Image (cartoon, rainbow, N blue to C red; front, side, top):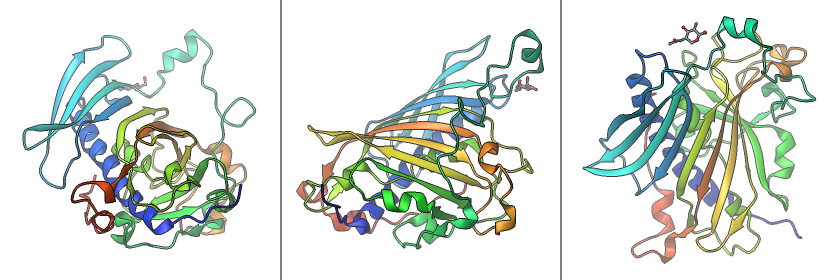
Length: 317
Ligand SMILES: *[C@@H]1O[C@H](CO)[C@@H](O)[C@H](O)[C@H]1NC(C)=O
């Protein structure tokens, strides 16, 4: 198969839209974290979001309900993201405690499978942030335009990105403000920074598509690194994505994501590269999204121009 020259300007405009989806989930997750903040189960363990209709920029309500109050490991909850009286997103959550109690260590062997390999998975980058170049800032990437985040791609994926085969890459994402700290609420936002496999389809004549997400799931794998943890930056992650299958009808396809801790912030010098830095990184969350393709130009009143001019400034999480 020949190498395919994509219309990347359109793909990046899609990416700007996609960020909003992660942000909606982040708002709902924030509501549930507050709801659970005085209980034994304060950490998110799993979430599922079903998108029922598109949300708009403006006021919202999040209604939270307990499905099962757990006496043991987990509490199960439901939440609705509501705008103007209409349920836009339906979510389910499992909450628990991501920390390992001391007593575990005496009652049975520790079951955690941790790097280094061969059994454990390792961060899916080869290069330290100090060896990765900043992705050029694009005004359509609103977070970047607002300079709240910086992105740098591991060069090992630069070659792979538009080659025949899966859509696969891993970016470092740094929160620009030096006072920022990673939070659980931010992980769905990071898990939504990707290029869709649909954009790589060699049969695609031009990119006039919007790829709404129908279902998003995330499993939180590991507690956030405490500030000052050796070898882990406190405001940077590595966000990996891979998409492989695309089927009709509806151009249905998927994106699999991993959000990892990162060894340093984008912009930190080479002296921050410590021996064995890859073995210090942990996968914070894995995510999966199911999307469809909607041809915007074929929609009544629709136009790809509208997509490209979406303007939105996210409040701080
Ligand atoms: C979570 O587990 C850790 C380790 O056992 C414990 O120190 C902490 O108090 C627990 N958190 C809550 C909210 O119970």
